Image (tube, rainbow, N blue to C red; front, side, top):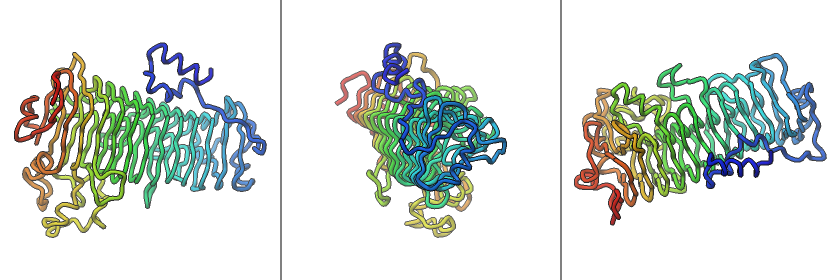
Length: 478
């Protein structure tokens, strides 16, 4: 069925709202490109690995209809050369048979993967099937990459991930990680990212932080726009450890079991014009069932904030003009007083902030004095939340329907200069974190300073917190 007919059908049935219809790509299947005149035709049963090895860089391969395989060896794989393209005719499938680990590997540049269904590969945890080694400037577009173990793909510098169906993979739809210098200039646009983490890694390895729709590590400069991110078993989008300069815009993010967006020990992001629906319900209910009063957020900023000293399109975290409907909660701004560079409580133990050259620099006694006292922390600071619409459902009772701005009482390690309430005081009063000009419907409560303090609207807007100036709570605001 043509893509435009699929879109019209989805609109008619009310499955996808008009603003998000262009990303409903899984129902349509891969959009097959036209066959170039100079393409090398590859029939099922052809040894594509050998053909790639024998032909020069810049070759275009045309995979015809049918199931293409890479043989019985678990390390059977295609190693592209610079400028190679792999295009799929309608019905072309590259199938790992549950045996091959990877489809496309190594670090060629300017590779194109288009119009294929790629399935049945068995990548290990934290590894990916397509662009396994995070090669530079790969264009991965109009594919269906589904039912694989590990991640559907890795991402490298200047990678373009366009209009793909990334569905039902064992760990992630996208794992954006490259050892060494990290990743710059990533574009993720128009994809449907759904049903990932089928292997339920957070249950297998509690606290691993290794699940969800897409995960980003040390990415400097990313545009994530116009995607439909839904029904992932974990977070929808998760940026973890020294990411910077993100634009997350015009996405529909809904029905993910954990956070819609988790931005962790990272910097400088604009979250604009997105719709967040029915996220975090599974995670929030699990916390509530065990009596954990931590304010689970639909957007969760954990030790993340604006930093003017880092080059980016913004020097803040701006969350603006988004719609939040029937999620477990709203936005949580959190700063763990015990988590800093060189602290045993930092789960990213090999990493330091982007302001300090080495982990060992953040040690006693120097860390107790400025500038290290400030620069050894990932700070939740310079966060501006405005122009958003927040609504809760009628069934929201107990721990749901909360907004939060808080930290914990610092206790660890014994040489930490952040013990006591110093971080709670800073994140609440001194780090330029502001809500204003928002519109609320339903019942909302606000956890502020630490988990022991929950206030209503008047307490949140009044002294000493003075949040949500000119916001409306069923009234006209200012």
